[in-house]
Image (cartoon, rainbow, N blue to C red):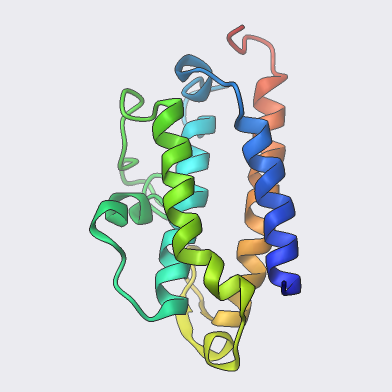
Length: 160
């Protein structure tokens, strides 16, 4: 196991634990207008995994993950509409997306070869990064949003 995989497994595992047991109303609740819901942030995290995993492996984004990959940026780092509606973002859908993106990204994190480290891609925020930079971001990204989910779950007005 690589250090990238160890860090990603820990942060992703804690993030998924934070989502565990949430119902659709809770996943799609907003603290204020314009705030990402827990579901939107989750699909965004999976979208980054889909984009980076595909780039690291040198493959096209699978057809069933194209909209998920769009969530890496759409409605999150720009003003475009988020690619999924709250009706679509059920607990089962969110967890299913994470299962699919795990299959795409985990091989690179388990074996961060020189070739994978040297790949270049555009990050979700816009700069061109290397595969090594992508793997570092993948390891950290779920933890960042885990903190957001925790805050939303503990905010006044969060559905019981």
